[in-house]
Image 1: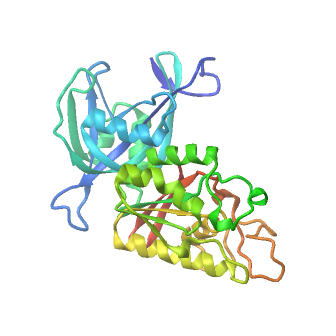
Image 2: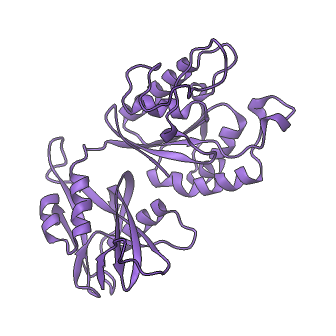
Image 3: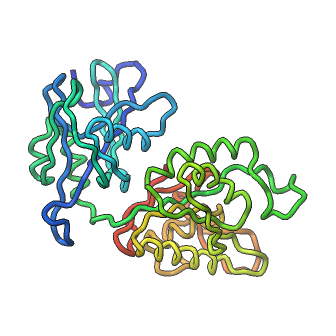
Length: 331
């Protein structure tokens, strides 16, 4: 039985977590201005048409599950782009949450019907909205339709845990990852390949390079050190660092190739705030009064919106339409 998950409708049971996506490809000749087609699957068990999705494996991040389930159900390799509204409902007497992303199809192995999914259709979005069996799928499709066409997805990461600066006797740039940080780097190595990056860029600090090491090994890519993503050194304006890093990300986005970048905690929030729409590095919208990068008296400072704070070992999925940031979603 399926129904809306409302305040009075949720049984006192463990929530089932699942993930999936709106998988799309250009229609027509694929030239600019043509429309898109999205993928729907038919499940004989329920005799329904729905977006491809499935339950998370134990310990599996939702984004990883979304890409995996699309590959398993529709035999489509896809790159995640923008997080879409989650669906909440009751299935078989248990509350269920399904997280969705828009995913660009980049390859297919040839769909083969099985007992779980026996039919697959590629349709214009408006036709897909009419065909899906559940209102929540229609809502997700409409949200996808309202997005601009994403041209590239970048990953922006903060370095993993490297212990406390006060307990490290050497140069701060040489501070290595600790045991927690090495585990976080391994977790990131599961996610970074999802965007199928062609380059890995790192700030020059040792902990930033080490954060990308497991992903580099998995992808067989070199790590390119780019000091533009470094935190400011003494005497350097923080606004200057943030502007330079933001400009570099836009340059990478315009090039149209997916890239993963590892930077630092005093750079990332300001960069995201600027890319999200601020025209003035000294007046980033959404910041509280007095919430600034760094304590230096008399230095030029940049407000830091709480919404862009990034934990060590965390990161963001950045979706661009040409030089414009469409969405920044934490992963």
